[in-house]
Amino acid sequence: MKINKNTRISTLINENKDTIEVIASINKNFKKLRNPILRKVLAPRVTIADAAKVGGVSIDVLLDKLKKIGFEFEGNIDQVKSEEQIHTKKHVKQEIPEKDKMVFLDVRPTLDSGKDPFDIIMKTVKVLKDDETLKIINTFEPIPLIRKLQAKGYESWTERPDDATVVTYFRKNNSQWVDDEVEKIVKKSKKSFEEELSRFDGHIRQIDVRELEMPEPMVTILKEIETLKEGEALYVEHKKIPQFLLPELEQRNFEILYKEIDCNNTVLLIYKKEGK
Image (cartoon, rainbow, N blue to C red; front, top):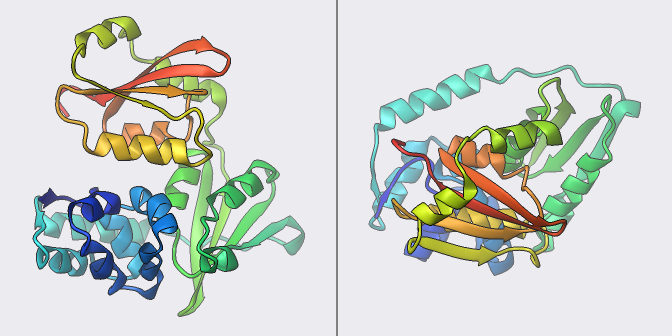
């Protein structure tokens, strides 16, 4: 199987179960992938590039291990490593806010119990005041969470007080996503939902995520589009427009159209942008 830096760990595992042990050998934190529950939730969120960063190794180290179990990297590894260095240089440590403006959240016990702390974190973010900073204590850098909260309008920086502890700070900035902006992104396409639906007639994959608990709808959709073939579209029955999903689709060059059926049912049509 050919892979690139954006290939999800879940895709690798589905192709070859030996991936679990290969990834686990890089960093003790990845041993959590052996837990079926955590694997189901975490693996679809993490790319190969993310895994290397979380594991604290260069991406070529990870790719070398994956090659040994049959995966073939397509792309320029030197270019990927150069992009990693640029990203690292852009990271700037911020001034630590006063304690009365800090919200602390230690997710290590939750992870140790085999549970996903995503819901706890997002509930905390929801009630976070504009002048407050969220301080998350973890055992690894939460790259997927950083990406999601950046899309929601938060800046972040990370500290490593010791080898077993990673502290990540999140603070709101002036580029936050609000509901009106979310809808503008979805509506910016002039394409008709019905016309595009007809265009993909006979080549549509359909899923219903309305009964799933957060963050399963997003995880399920991202997993489905990984294997979406050229000329295919994903038809999703959802409760609403999934705002956290939009920046992920933009990043991966997917088009999304929607149609509101009623207050509890919005259908989505997702497909690869032409020429991408």
